[in-house]
Amino acid sequence: MLLKNKLILLFFPLTLSVCFAQQQVSDTASINKLVKYSVSPNFVDFKTNYFEWQNSSSVGGFYDKLKKGDNVTILHIGDSHLQFDLGAGTTRKRLQQVFGSRGRGLVFPYAAAGTHSTYDYSSASFGNWRSNKNVSKNISYKLGVSGITINTRDSLAGFSFSFYNSDLREEKINLAVLFFKNTDSSFNIKYRLNKNDDWIFVNVHNSTNKNCVQIPLAASKFDRYFELRCVKSDSTQKEFECSGVSFESTEQKGVLYHSVGINGARILSFLKQELNDEQLKTLNPDIIIFDLAANDLAFGPFDSIGLSKSLLRSLNVIRSSLPNASILIANIQDISVKERSVINGLYYSAFLRKFSKTNQIAFYDYYDIAGGKGSINKWLKAGLCKSDKCHLSKSGYILKGELFANALLNSFGNYLMHPTDSLLLIRKPIVIEIIIKDSLNTSVLVSKETPIKKDVVAKEKAPVKPVTAIVKPVPAPVKPKKPEPKYYVVKKGDNLSRIANKYKTSVKALQLKNKLKTDFLQIGQKLLIP
Image (cartoon, rainbow, N blue to C red; front, top):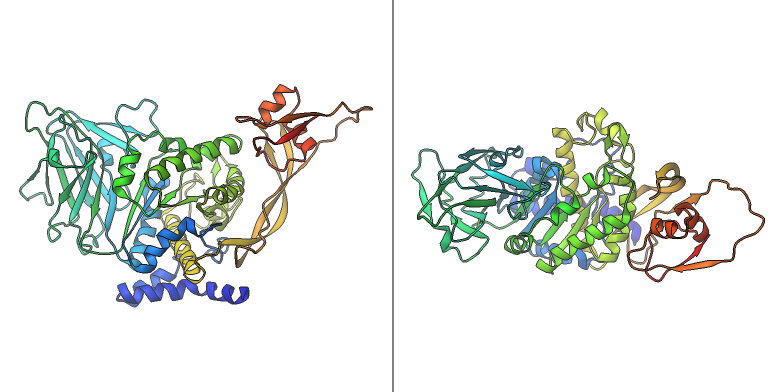
């Protein structure tokens, strides 16, 4: 039965795309685009391009809505890769070709904040604006889901968007949701959909929602341009504060895909956003893709304890606002910083696989699928990344977006066939030798298993070989007598470094004495002190 399922899954992306494309895509070329990659380098693992989960309930709500043909909303949160948006934009386009489109989603007038816009629109600003981002040290204005806020006290200030996508008019966009600070001191606004049109006045104070106002647009008139200006209606109005605009269609069914990212953002950047709760509830996504970690992993040793704390805090924010939403955490791609390979992506794969099981979320091992350790050099040679070996080229981002869209479709196909199964890829381990640093900055030689993937999908009871780490000690002088055994019971907040310092030993010695394969500790765990 497993072999039969394996053969079905190998051909599933084609059959799934054709099935849905026949319903919503009218030409063969569009269908072919859904099932083919723009490039197919041999170092990318296309066969195991799936989302993974231990419990299907972690994605069931989202995939059930897709199965029924209901409207779905996706929120993709990231860093500089998302601010440019070409990768996520490619995913958006692919999914909307299959399931239908409900608009462009959340955008931001980046020009007013002095930074670049995305690949599919430009922005312009008028008047004087100030801004804060989630990477700012001192934050004066409350941040929302977009991670960036602009503020003005100039009653003549404004901004505009010019979209490059010619399909937007066909998508019948008829609604702009403006996220702003709704107080008595806020300016009103006016807008127009063409530079030659008359202005349309909007009294933002009439909005019953305290974090946004819905602006009806004439779908027949929306033609890739939107301009907004402040209007001071009385002396009490002194400022205007904005954290984004979502362009949507209420006339069509399908996917609304919001993607937001700030250059340099880390996981903790998300937690600086005070307006997350109310804006998450307003956007109401069915699945949240948490794609933040590259800037956490690029520098320093791998900090599993710090990552765990930051991710758990982020999950709590999301789940307190959206208890029924699905959550997926994506790994980073192999990158290099100053010609130094960032090996932390490899460790993050093992960490996320365990973390996702424990916290009932989905996981995308993009690090492994994109080629694994050292693969960024192959991406560079193939013209898929820039010379910084971190950011991708245009064709690289398109491939990344295609991989993500097809991973969602491949996993959806498995869910339709086996809705109660786990989806974990079986990997055959091989041993490589690498050097890592422990928390005391002591070199440790580690024998670590790294996966070679097979195009097999495991059911819940199928064995999955874990990634393991076996510490090989540096030979030490043999002492004639061993000290009396001494034990320590792990308490909340403990880590190996803290315990080692307390007993004037080393992390390496603790690991050897207790045969620890990872740095994970559990409260109540008994450690033998060297």
